[in-house]
Length: 117
Image 1 (spheres, one colour):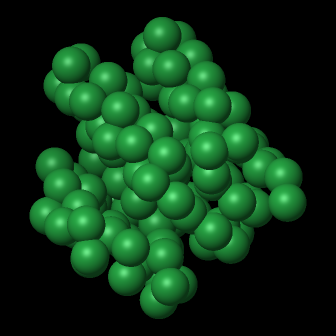
Image 2 (cartoon, helix red, strand yellow):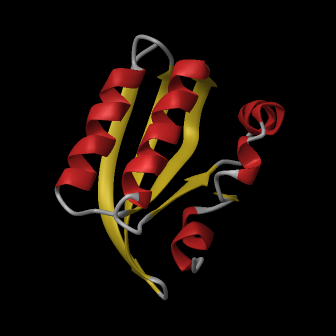
């Protein structure tokens, strides 16, 4: 399985957000592609990111590491990284690792875009 990525800018009550739609598997083979996308966005000045994981079928520890790295990158610029996920098998990974305390996790992109820090 491959990884698909697309980005779009969305304006919400909390300001502009960049939504990164992720599809497929985020694993040791595909995670570098996501990492490059997040680094590029931050380098281009996008500091408020919403990662839409609705299309993600699989997530491993490498993928979690990329998301944590992205969070650190945006926080260095007073930014935010919110996740959109309502798939139980993916949410379970965040609960087991304790990352539900680190990432704001929303059920819809609209909810994530509307959220204020």
